[in-house]
Image (cartoon, rainbow, N blue to C red; front, side):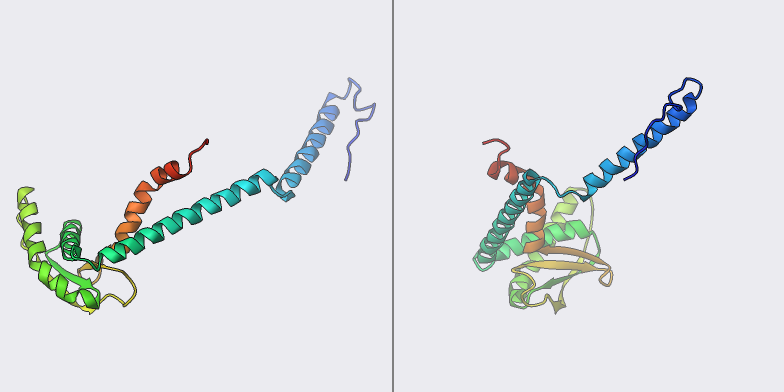
Amino acid sequence: MRRTWLSWSACNAAQPSALLEVCIRARVCVCRRLFVRFILTPPPLADCDTVSKMQTRDSLLISLKEDALKSLAKRCQGDGYPKLLESLIVQGLIKIEEETVEVQCRGEDVVQVQGVLAAAVNTYTQLMQQAGHHVSPKVALSTNRLAPGSTVGGVVLIARNNRIVVNQTVEARLDIAYSAVQPKVRAALFPARI
């Protein structure tokens, strides 16, 4: 470590620029040392506690989301599932706004989707007419199926040769709801001060 000492001649009133230059060099050296020390030192223990607390909170929120998905999976096997499929198709049609749409679903949902497809298109047409738009979409069930185990339920709407895709699966809708209410859930579960 090199130190810069002020010489008596530098302090002489006849050489004020030399004194200023020596002071600047000394200040730069001190700043460099502090910066290197700040970069190389590990964070204090309190910061480590904060990080571990945040990781614990995140793992709890993820487990909460997984529990919600399990609950939704049980509902997808119940009596209300066809009505949910119809609502998801109607909402997907509103989002996609295309004339020709294909609906993809899981292999075990084919019969249920075929049963609600006409009612969903009818509901969509009525809603659009109430909004002042006259549409007559051509909605068909796709021969392609969603991969087994990729979702617990729901549909995917596709238009324009797979260039427009609206994911209306249960997982996609849960992700949307989760991100929307996450701040409120955090505030309710982990208050700032206890």
